[in-house]
Image (cartoon, rainbow, N blue to C red; front, side):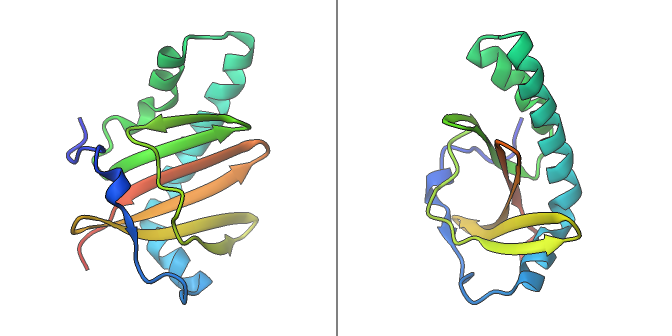
Length: 141
C-alpha cells in the first residue's frame, strides 16, 4: 500500500522551476533515475507483450504497475502509448513546468512539485511510441 493516497494528485502545484537549469533538474531527479528507468523498461516490455496476448485493461494495468505497488516513495505514474493512457492512481497533472536535461544518451524531463506540503519530483522519458512519467516523494528540504 502507498503511504500517501493519490486522490489528491490534482493538488500538485509546480514549484519555481521556470528558471531552473538542466543541472538542477538532474540533481532533483538523481535519487530516482535508476528506479524510473527500471520501471520504464518493465512497462515497455509489458506493453509490447500485450500486443500478442491482449488482456483486459484492469489486468494489464495490474501487471504494468506491479513494480510500483510496494514503493513507498512513488506517488503516481503514467504510461502513454499513442492515444492510450495508463495511470497508477490519479492522472498526473498536465500543467507541470518541465525542465529538460540530458545524461549521456538519455533525455529526461523533470518537474518539481508539492502535494500539500509534501515535496515531490516527476521524471518523464520517452522511448519510441512510449512516454513514462513517475512521481516520487522527496525528502523535505
